[in-house]
Amino acid sequence: MKSGLDIDTFAPRLSFFFNCHNDFFEEASKFRAARKLWHDLITERYSPKNPKSAMLRFHTQVAGVSLTAQQPLNNIARVTIQALAAVCGGTQSLHTNSFDEALGLPTEESATVALRTQQIIAEESGVASVVDPLGGSYFVEMLTEEIYQKSLEKILEIEKMGGSMKAIEAGYQQREIHETAWAHLTEVESGERKIVGINHGVLDDEEMPPLLKPDPELGIRQSEKLAKLREGRNSASADFSIGINFNGSEGY
Image 1: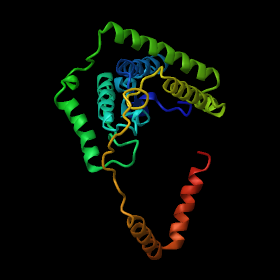
Image 2 (image 1 turned 180 degrees about the vertical axis):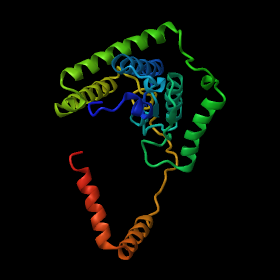
Image 3 (image 1 turned 120 degrees about the horizontal axis):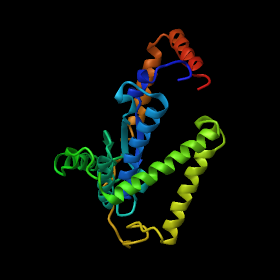
């Protein structure tokens, strides 16, 4: 904006990436609040002519940090709850993690289950047929407004610090993340926050699902392929191009 760009030249193309955790109503309300907050800030501050400038485009990924290595099949339920909350909150695209996320790379089976979870929500649940399926619920509307107001307070606080970059340099965002993570860990360790398979419903003896075993020859084959590429390329041209990219990225 400071360079003179009109808001409508780039705002419709902006997109955001959100994470979704287990608290269904809070997460759905979070997305609803984000959509309203973006609309209000863009409209009030920049008066766009294109209505798409004030529409929050966002992708959601379920929270890998919420998925457990213990009783990993329980993660199918967690992923489903999180994905459903994201859809009810209005996400435009979605990534569902595999149930073996905490154990390693997904197997074909676990990746298929993750995909089918999305497809069942989209094709069988009916929630994707409604623009705002939770709209009008007293609890959801109250949560949405509360998150909206607290988020706005955070934005204004960051602006008083000189903007997001100044806040990053001061360690503000990192500190907020660390404090939240520490509070969550403390609640789990004390038993205040129940996590099935961790501090509730624990099994002494459980079977692990089959895990993906990487091909040990893959790294060797890739190294040979890269060496062959380097042998056949124009070294001077490659060094020149690498230099351009390096110099162009300085300061970012």
